[in-house]
Image (cartoon, rainbow, N blue to C red; front, side):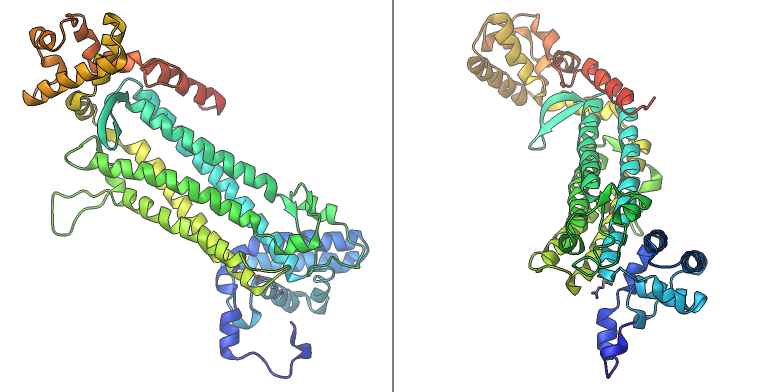
Length: 457
Ligand code: ARG
C-alpha cells in the first residue's frame, strides 16, 4: 500500500511489531460502515462517479459478508483492518477500489472506527448496567424489611435493612451509567475527513459522513481529531469506576458467603467446588470480579501512559490504544453479567442476618438516643452510660435487651422499662426514617422511585 518510495520491504521484525490486525480486526464492522459512508459522500460531492461508488459499496458488502461467515484473515503484511479490507476489496472489484481512499487517511479512519466501536460498547454496557440495577431493585423490594447488621470497620455498627444495602449499589451503578452516558456525548463527533492531520483539499462534506454514522457533527480541528483518544480514556475511566463498584459488591458476597457469616448461599451456577475438599462451594465468580477490576484499572493506566508524551498529531504508539480498551470492555461485560446473576440468584439467609444484627450490640446507639430523648441527657453523657451497659452485657455474654431493668438502673437510675421497646432491631431500623435512611418505609419509597424512573415494573 505504501511501497512506492522503498527499495526494500520490511524485515520480519518490522512486520511483526507493526501488525495490529491480530487485535484491530475487532473493528471490522465499524470500518466497513465508515468506508460506506465515506464513499457515498465522495459520490455526492462528485469526487468519485456514482458508478464507481456503487461498485465499491457492493464490494464492501461482499467483504463484510466474508468476514461475518469466515472471520477476518490475519496477514501481517497488510498491517491492520483498514489495509486488509482495502486489499480484499481490490481483489473483488479491481483497481476502482483504489478510489475509496481519496480524501481520507488511516489516521482519521482509525479514529472514526474506534469512536464507533467505543460508542457501540458504551451502549451495550448501559443496557447491561440497567439490567443490574433492575436486579438490585427487585431484590431490594423483596428485602425492604430484612434486618442485617450494618458495619463500619467491618465491626457491627447499627442494624440496617438488606434492601437499603442493595439500594446503595443501585445508586453507585446509577452514577456509573451517568458517567458512560456523559462520555458518549463528548465522544459523538466525527473525525472522518480530517485526513492525515491537516484536512484535505478535496471538496468533501463532513456533515454528511457525520450524519450517516450517527455522530452529532464533525470534529472542529483536524490535528486534534486524529490525535485525540480522550473518548477511549473517558470510557476506561468510566469502566474503572464501575469495576471498583462491582469489586466492592463482589467482596461483600465473598464475606457474606463465608461460613462464619453465612448471610448468603451463592447460586450453584456461579460457584465452583474443590477437587480435594468435598464440602467446598467457593465464590469464584465474585473473586474474579474483584480480580478483574484490577485488570480494568490497569487498562486505564496503560492507555494513559501511552498517550501522555505524544506530540501532535498521529504517532504509531497510538496503535496500542486498542488492546486495553478491548480488554477492559470484555472484562467489564463479564463482570456485570456475573454480578447480575449473583444478585438475581442469591439466597439471602434472613435468619443468619437477623441473628448477627442482634449480636454485637448493634442497638447501642438506640439506647443512647433513648436517654437523650426520654431522659433529656446530653448525648456525650448518654454515650458514656451506654458504654457501661455494653461493658456489663459483654461481661455477661448477653444482648443489651437481656440485661434486667435493675442492672440497667444500677448504671443509671433514669432508665425505665420503656427502654426495651427501643432496643429491638426492628425498632432501631424503623426509627431511622430520615430521608435516605434505612427504615423499611424509606427503602420501599426509594424502590418505588427507582421503578418509576426507569420504567421498571
Ligand atoms: N493501525 C493503525 C492504528 O491503529 C492505523 C493508523 C495508521 N496510520 C499511520 N500513519 N501509520 O493506529
